[in-house]
Image 1 (cartoon, rainbow, N blue to C red):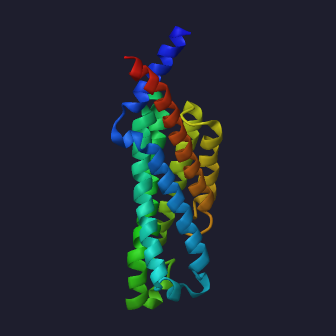
Image 2: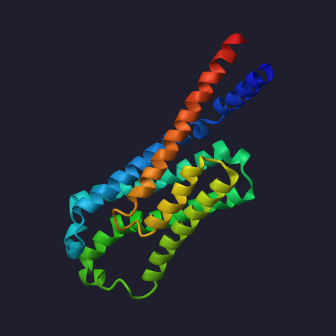
Amino acid sequence: MTTTSKSLTATATTDVSRSPLARSAGLLALAAGGLFTITQLVTAATLDRNNLMTSILEPVYLVNGIVYFGVFCLLMIALVAIYAREGHKAGKFWTIGFCAAVVGTFALGANVGWFDVFVAPWIALVAPESIKMTNVGSLPIGGLSSYVLFLIGWVLFGAASFRARVFPVAISLAIVVSALIAWPSAQAPYGIPFGLTIVGLGVWMLRRSTAANQIAEPATTAR
């Protein structure tokens, strides 16, 4: 009994003594996943793909797009925080999965976040005929590569998390499945399952931190 208590205390102390970024991993994941889901819902409700040129010039598109770009930035920060928190218990494969997820998130964020929000509306104003010529030159290659990198990155991250048992099995598998669904995530609502999965990951990490703090408090008081 004494040995078990000491083990729990040591684990809890380790959990609450991490860096501020690592301690914020759950909250960052919750915020990133929640905002990802909301922006997908707004896009699905407001973007008319049959009248794309008009839709991307609407103020709601700009505001939602700026938030969407911010979500990808937040998601990358959340990944770094998760690695800072859980990386000590995982091996090389999980580290590779983490790096792949960061690269994929950056690539897709630059595409459907920054480019679609700031560049596409400008092109629609100065060269509207260009919007209809999407399959010309290197642009489609760059666009497709960002989706593929996002897909590979998050599938690897989910598979590596499953193998290393970093997260619960259900969350690791959900990351893989939702990434497969979300790979054309510029087209809402395909990204909603992915956003909800990241929300679930954030909730799990927050609950785990709360439990660790509750274990650590009596031990600290006893000292």
